[in-house]
Length: 384
Ligand SMILES: *Cc1c(COP(=O)(O)O)cnc(C)c1O
Image (tube, rainbow, N blue to C red):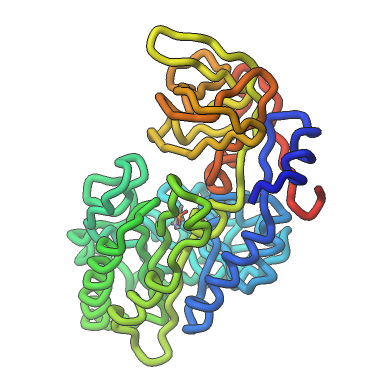
């Protein structure tokens, strides 16, 4: 990925910045097409993972829809050229204003996460003289084996409607004449590398679909959500996630009714590997137990390590010297502002360039202005 010519170009740019490899993004989208779209699956990109227009353009071209979790994301998706009938809208705390944005654009699906939300949406749609298309987000109580902050499908989590509320839901639905129940929706968590939780999810979906049918609610669609993980430790060997196994699992396990549509909402697995955070080494400081490589990017540019102990591979782009042990740290006044501890890297010095890999998802979008730092910029492979 980082050829000598590319490294030379990157070395001319003011650091820190995000670098996106659009060829890798295209190849990833081609794999999604080959293994997912080709099976007739409807795939929505979770725009919260990365909302840069250049990336959204490629995703639009590839024929994906969008999954939003805020009103502004709906507006961004439409501005980027997506058709509202390709937009799903989830979120536990949608404001009235956000629901109105969805109604105004007549989006494909409001993925409702509580009984109260259904009532509010019904009222808003009714006063507009509209009928809103709805999927119920269900909490299937499945352990996703991922970091607890990105587990979303357990009873203790705030997301979705738990199964014990279904009787109340079925009782209420006939009274809500301004919403139309079209589907059921799930999203059990993120960075799920093992297919086993998805297999359990298939069983739950099959079981719940029957419950809805027995209550007189046949479903036009089933939305599986996202959460498929990427290989943070070896992004070069596994630059494209194994979409073949992922989609084949659903093909095999899910009981899909005739004419029923199946939707997915993938974020990280589509854009994660195509982005890197490029940073320069400011200082090397000898500590008691390690050497600190202090770089000019920090948790303000990439918060995942500080927030969920995420490990991003650090590659030194400008040194081939014999290795030493380093803690790679940012400049922010928080000890959590650490990218890696005790890793072996080619000996580095002030001015060397490093790439923090697999940062295309939940990287730039989560950047902040803490310490009044400048907002991080982005560069793309087609402009260098
Ligand atoms: C965040 C999110 C996704 C995408 O998750 P990834 O782990 O990035 O694939 C999908 N659906 C919903 C409802 C989400 O909140």
